[in-house]
Length: 114
View 1 (tube, helix red, strand yellow):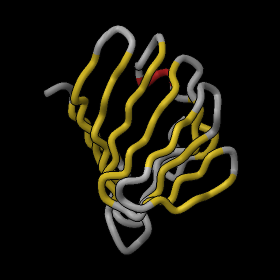
View 2 (cartoon, one colour):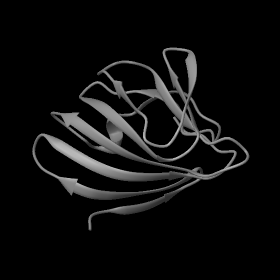
View 3 (cartoon, helix red, strand yellow):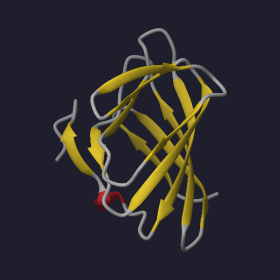
View 4 (cartoon, helix red, strand yellow):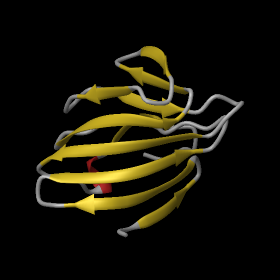
């Protein structure tokens, strides 16, 4: 397994990485959410393993159940949130030219990160 990281909202584990793709398992604690963010060098595909999950894309929020998936294009604002009643687990498939955490542009963050 690859890198594992604890975050204020939950954790992620890198499952697979090549030059053009990175796959992560991401866990969001009940009542928490990731920053509302964009990326300039990668697109993402999210597959919900454990839900329901609240996904916001360009200001529009949608509830996705386990087994659902959604695509996020490069440069599109997005966020994943777990309702207060359950944790969310999803698989994130990143495609693009760069997968570093410094390709995150945070538009809004519950934890004061830039």
